[in-house]
Length: 244
Image (cartoon, rainbow, N blue to C red; front, side):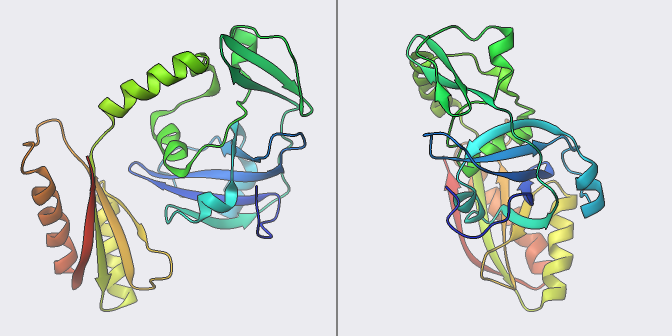
């Protein structure tokens, strides 16, 4: 649930490996399910939008999350405000053996499979930052998810074995101007790069492991490639981390 005074209707810019996407905070869910609602804006991934553009955007789908927790991730930042879109009254909740319909916060006792109509509905959930980013990058939509709790557990185990490997490098710069030049170059070259919270001259740059990378060398190679760009812009290595 949102703990700070984030206004309903606030837009949130999301940095991904394919550029920016956008959410809009749609308020607290009205029922017994403790979650915030957010609209995923129907904008081309990677295209930076103005406030005027965002106000004209439609909604691709809604999701459940905690907006405050999303904003603790450096990939998420507030970027303007507009009148809020109206969230749907009907959602669905994942159950063992199927799904239940939730209308105006009241959950049905009937368990049913996710047919075409039910699969269109948003899912009662608490999506973390990395899942939101993954869904934006992949073009995911609610109708893609029709598995119940048992199927979801099996899928989670399978996905953990197939998760993409990444390396992130933390870099500081001698000036804001140098940071700006480096940030633009990293993004032009396809890296996920964005400013670090609380660090006016610091960024984090993330690279995905390519299919052809050598298992024992890809982290060093990725860090070297990132630092070559950073050092050309007077960047200083602060640290790094890898997702294996």
